[in-house]
Amino acid sequence: MPRKARRQRQDTFDFLYLWLTGYDVQVELGVNHRLRMNPLWSNLDTRVMEARSELEVRGKCFNPEERKEEKFVLTLRGNPGPGDFSHTVADIQQHDAHGAPRYRTYRGCPVPVFECPKGVAILRRERHVDTWNACMHVPENYISDCLVVLSTKAARYIYIHEHIVEKERWINSFSIQSNDPTE
Image 1 (cartoon, rainbow, N blue to C red):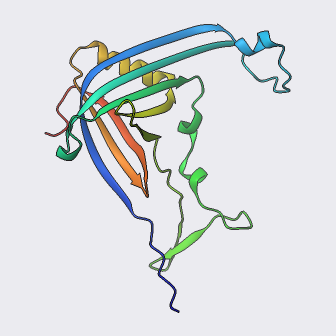
Image 2 (spheres, rainbow, N blue to C red; image 1 turned 135 degrees about the vertical axis):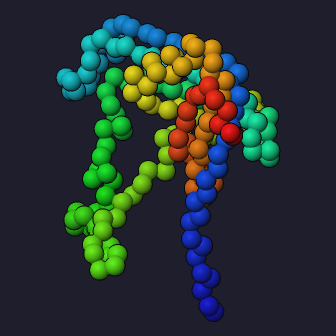
Image 3 (cartoon, rainbow, N blue to C red; image 1 turned 30 degrees about the vertical axis):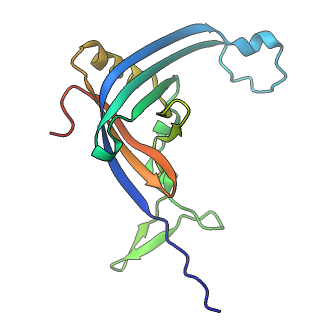
């Protein structure tokens, strides 16, 4: 019996344009709450004081036509450290079973093979509330930049570059802007 050919992974990309319908901000400062619980951990590098910032942006899709009127709630959480934003291209190079960097040959020259991230955050559908939700961990200065744009009252649009991998939807890029992204 012949074997059925395995289907290759299909990555697709979509551009979503949203009207900004609202936003909420929360900024916290305080003593690390885990210290009061007499913790049993050995990580002495944990910070004593914590500062957290969170920005929740809401929007309604107007383009593409088949996703029109869908609601989105995007949460941006500020991290004090750079987190994933400190990675370089060398960090995403694939390695073989022995830990050596992988290369492929392109026109006779070795070229590094990379494992590109799927996106910044997963976009999930909450059917009982009929919204799409995502939580992005970003550098704190990015939240400050977003708040500057939002405070001008000119920001009216959200742009999302969506990356669909099999059945998962990822945010490839995200922006809040004052100009119409469809133009």
